[in-house]
Figure 1 (tube, rainbow, N blue to C red):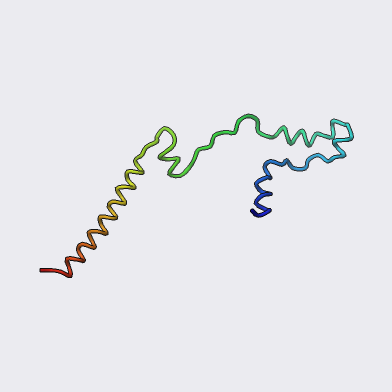
Figure 2: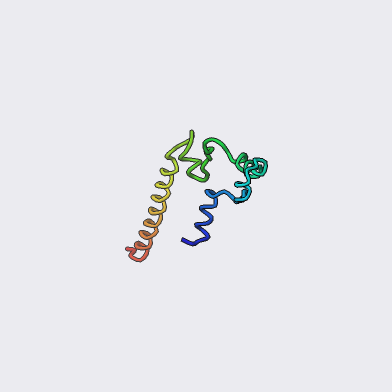
Length: 98
């Protein structure tokens, strides 16, 4: 993996440097205000569920879940195969007319 990719993936886990070691060891609570302010803005509780998009979200997830897209895919593949086979059959008979 590239170092930048690892750094980007770990960026969400490592908080930014808001407090310096001198602020932490000085003993005054008011100097920690930027750190407290940063952590107070973080979301609390479980992560909200997000809706999946695209074909999967529209046809296979949720209350409108259906297998109809798979049926239409099979019908389309059959229709394409039948059309190709029929065209090949016509070409065969065109050259061998009685």
